[in-house]
Image (cartoon, rainbow, N blue to C red; front, side):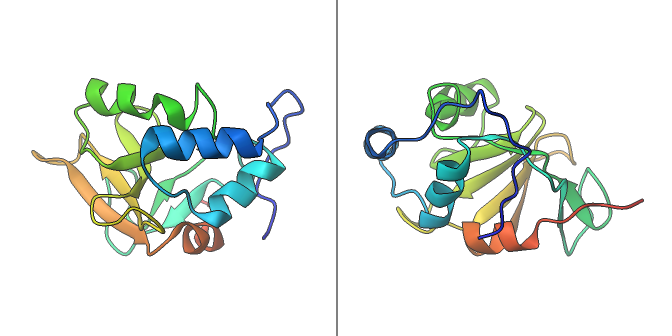
Length: 149
């Protein structure tokens, strides 16, 4: 696995207990590739800033912005329910990046493990725009790149 982090030594180290507690609280099995990534650094800004799309989004014609990944911590994925309610997002998703108007998430609506990764845009058209980006988290990581204008 490539290291995608802009290293932040202040980040809390991920423990096995944190993983077990998060999965229990969220009621899902976290992807191994996500856990391994969070063991390197438990969330933060990443080196890459984009993921390609096959259709235009509210962000660009051919990609979305991805500048951070949310970690397994209280202010990370464990805050998921708050943001789901606050932004009226679909249930059974796990937010991994976003700013309120657009989100990247693990989509657990049809599964409890190895979910596809989706993009959600709340301001693109009249309805919530949802686009599947990758079949799983590992494929999502592999597709990240640096956008050059």
